[in-house]
Every structure is written in C-alpha cells, then in structure tokens.
Length: 395
Ligand SMILES: Cc1ncc(COP(=O)(O)O)c(C=O)c1O
Figure 1 (cartoon, rainbow, N blue to C red):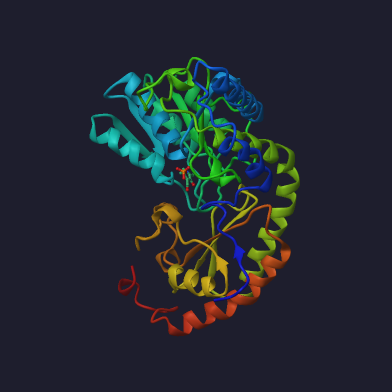
Figure 2 (cartoon, rainbow, N blue to C red):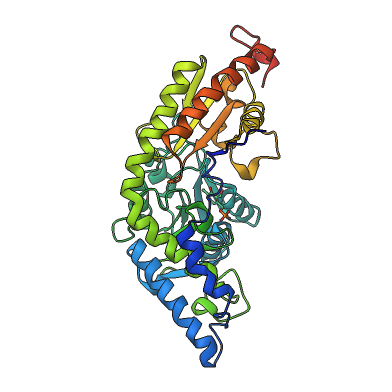
C-alpha cells in the first residue's frame, strides 16, 4: 500500500470543503433547535434555513420557494419523476435516456411496471441522444414526463439540456434533469434553461453525503413523495437537516465563486492525463463526447483487460478511480452506459473513469501517468485476450 493518495474518483464523491465544514459546526453544537418549533430557540435556527434557501436559489438563479431540500439526489430524482407521473396518472408517457443513473432509470422502470408508458431513448457512440427522436417520441402526447440528465456521471458527456427542455416544453411535457454531475462544474441557470425540475447532490460538490436539492419551478405539478409533515411547504416531509442545509448553501457559494477558475485548471489536467494515457498505452479508446464533456472527467476503455484489475492495482499505488459507476460496483456487469454507447466489447470491460476535483494537482496527474502504463502492460501480458482473438470467447 502506497503512502501517497491520489483521489481521482470525484464523480463518486468529493471531500467536504473546509469552508463547508466550518459553516456547519455551530449546528452540531449550540444551534440545535428544530426550525419548526414555536419558541425563539428553534426560531433562531429557522432563519439560517431561510438564509441557506435564499443562497441556494441565487446559485441556480431561482426563487427561494422553488428550492426543496432532500436527503440526496436519489430522493430528488424519485420525487421529481414519480411525483410528476403520479400527478398525471397511469398511462402517462415517461421518457428518459438509456444512460441515466439508476436513481432515474429505476423509478422510470417501476412506473412502467405500474402501467405507465416508458421510453428509454438510445444514444450514439459518444453518448448523445437524437433530439429529432425526442421530438418524435413526444408527438401527440399530453402531460408527458421527460427526464434527461445534464451530464453523464461515467463519461462526463454534457447533454444539450436547453434544447431538450425546449422540445419538452413545446410538447407540453414536464421536464426534469438530473444535474448531479453538472453542479459546480458548469453554470446552471434556470432562467436560461427552461427545466421544470432539477436534482443535485451535496456530496458531489464538496458538501456532505446525505443532502440533496430538488429545484421545482413555480407552477410545476407533482405529488410529494415524502409524506408526514408540513416541512418544505408541504412538499417534502421530515425535520430539516439544518447543518447539512447550511453546508450545501456554502458549497453552492464556493462553486459560484470558483467554478470558472476550476474549469480552467481541471480541463488541462484532464487533457494531459488523456494525452499521456493515449501516448503510453496502446489499444485504448476514449469513451464519451470529447467536444461536450465535463472538464473533470475522463473515461477510457483499455482493450483486452478488466477495469476491476486496473482499479485494484492502482489502489495499491494509492490511486483511487472507478470502473462504471460506483453505485454499480460490487456487480461485475459491464456498465449500462458504456454498453448503450455501443463501445466495442473488447473495451467495455476495461472502461475506467478518472474524475478530478479542485483539490487535485498536475503532480497527481504525473503520478498516475508514472504508475499506470506498467500496470496496463503487465495486465496485458497476463490477459488471455488480445488482438486477433476469437470474439465469441469474450463477452
Ligand atoms: C448522475 C447521478 N445521479 C444521481 C446520483 C445519486 O446521488 P446521491 O448519492 O445523492 O443519491 C448520482 C450518484 O452517483 C449520480 O452520479
């Protein structure tokens, strides 16, 4: 085990920023009141929740009453999709893409099992949907529900979400976007992108795990998912997680202030990593849309070897990366995202994700470029597969 750690798994989770930790601390101490209490002790906490809601709203160019705090993006996605579909009832068309996170795909498939019509739009070889096909799919529908992610967690491919939202609105649909990976990396302005609902997760942009946001544009129709209390104006029951709400508001401010500089720093680091891998490792492909990609994400397919073997060997060198999405690890099934893109099967199993954050440096990139090529060369020597193999033996 190396005594150096290079954390390149920031699309799985990020560290809590010191500024966020500091902002949260008083709410684990003296400011422990319940914001819903009648007394002044609780009331003083309520004003911090109000203030956090205003700061979050400002970050998304939204109004405070359009912000709902949730426990995670999985809850936000479920609330948006199931809540909107259930408002319109059985038979409603639910349209999504084949490359969504399971937090979107699973609720859509559950709705299908319950009598809703579900469509998963295919993607091309870089992971983009066909906007004409979306338009066709929505033709003749009434009150459809559309969920298309802003950016893909595995490849970093950024979707043309403004155009997607405009097409959905023209068709009278409710449009939700999972913006979990976009948040903090690209500008999210709901005055420019006409989505009705938008989900983000604190732990993907330096707030803690266990806090999410659901933006709901005024007038959007949905049935609340969490029932049992009047919190969040009756749209999400459950006592407010005050420290984490304050924390995610601080994380939004840090993202607002640092995003442009961060993108300018991360893209060259990611590009150097990409160029270095392509130069030092033969039989490698880059997965995703290189022209429309998050600045921090690189997904490469190493042909003829297993991503898991690469990840374990890198882990011994103190380097943290992912194969597929972290949520799917523990299963040896190849990633549904990479498969949906039609990546050649010889590279599917070796698909590996490197995701950077504001805390990484060029030295981290160079360390990975020093350790990775010999690992790939050794795994290739051990692999029973290689160019000229019989494709039926490896699927
Ligand atoms: C695109 C995307 N959506 C949703 C989620 C789920 O987020 P959370 O961990 O907050 O439930 C993730 C987490 O990996 C993600 O990457």
